[in-house]
Amino acid sequence: MKNKSSFQKHATKITLACSILAATVSFGASASAFSDLKGNAAESKINALHQNGIINGITSDMFAPKSKLTYAQGLQFIVSGLKLSPQNTTGSKASDYFDKVKDNAWYASAFVAAKQSGLSLDKSIDPNAAMTRIQFAHLLTQALQSKGNFPVTLMYANITDGGKLSTAEMNSLQILVNTRLITLEKNNTFRPNEPVTRAEAAVLIYDAAKFAKEVITPDDSATAPVNDYEAAVTLEKAATGVNKATVTVENLPTSGYGLSIERIEFGANKTAVIYFKVTAPPAGSMNLQVISTASAVTYLPEGYTAVAKSVTGSASAAASSAGM
Image (cartoon, rainbow, N blue to C red; front, side, top):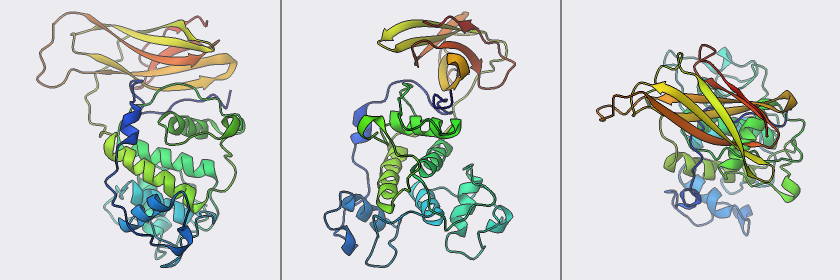
């Protein structure tokens, strides 16, 4: 099913303390910088972002919180807020990647940095077009993932108005909901195809920047070769409508090897693919030289069957399990 899509890469264990997200961000507070923010719920976050040079208003005195966010503004928000930088040092220009982004435009460098950071931007993108809520959410998730690993509670959220989202868009929305960066509205709705406002985007950037600073770690962990490892999946009822899925890999060379779940892809006919990664022991650690087993747990909607696959490719074996 399209609306029951995967959790993308960089998802790890299912423990994420809410207190992490409630921690204080290092952005400083300031007096109101924009006259049109008085009484707005996003006022303090927008002012903090402005004080730190992350976002600007449409003029020195006006932020236009209810105005539609353009792609030019949105990518500038994301690149500045999450500190994305161009990966190519050979002097690539915006026109190398985009048909409608002029090299001397004020937002050109943001488009280049976003593209080189792996964000999915079409060559024909119009920088002056308004972004929808799901478009902004999808690009923001990709930007977070480009920063490194972060833990996600792998619980499927039923988004009642998400039926027409692409698999990739649903992936991103699931991640933002599970990390509590997005809270669904009444009846679990998100309004994905409505334009995102400048205030809504600013709040997301503020919260995402805090999350990136306090939670995300660079993806520099050692990964063990997994092509010879077989994975088994067992399912058991965890709660009404939810099954616990345990992925187990045997024949690991020492007790120091571990297992993490990277993402889940939901397919047709209530099938799911759980992608895993075998991690090597930390450098210098002392481990028993015995054949060992490692397991990791995630959760699936009731009625799904599952297979486990290595994130390194099809060379590693996968074992299917019966649905419950």
